[in-house]
Amino acid sequence: MAERFYNEELRQRKEIEDELARGTQELENAKSLRDKVAQDLLEALDQKKSLDSQIRKLDDTVKEMEEKILAAVELLQKYKHERDALQIERDRALQEAVYLRKQLGEGSSNSYIPVFFSQFSFSDLEKATNYFDPSLKVGEGGYGSIYKGFLHHTDVAIKILHPDSMQGPQEFQQEVILF
Image (tube, rainbow, N blue to C red; front, side, top):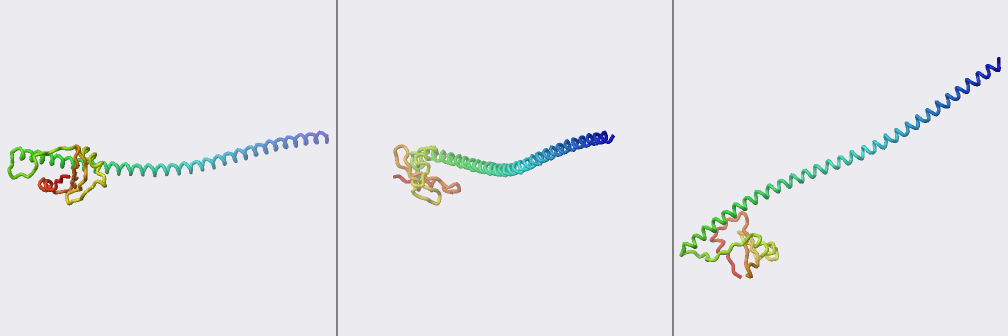
């Protein structure tokens, strides 16, 4: 009977050792899984930090681009207003030119304005002055800048009036220069 108890105790001991080995193995597996999850979590947190940093940089870039767009829109509006003002000024100048031509046509005796008028487009004037090259600038007056140019096989002086110039046609005519 002692042998039977001994064998029973051995069997129980073996079962306990097997159960203990299985528990130890499960514990090792759980620890390994925990370590892997912890490592994955650390990597995910690092990725989150990196992505958060990228998002902040992109937000800053978006804000910067929005500011640039707003500045560009403001500049565009400013240029549109300037263009509109220049168109009005051009229209007034054309009306004045028509008026002066009518005066010439009526044969005004006290007129000192020459009978010959030529009209040139702004692009013609730009080309004649090499796009208002500073090296071709021959003078600067109270009413505007004067550039040397070449139009229709002729040396000419081209005057660009300042936008706020109050010069009238008589003052302008007094400044006509022939080369």
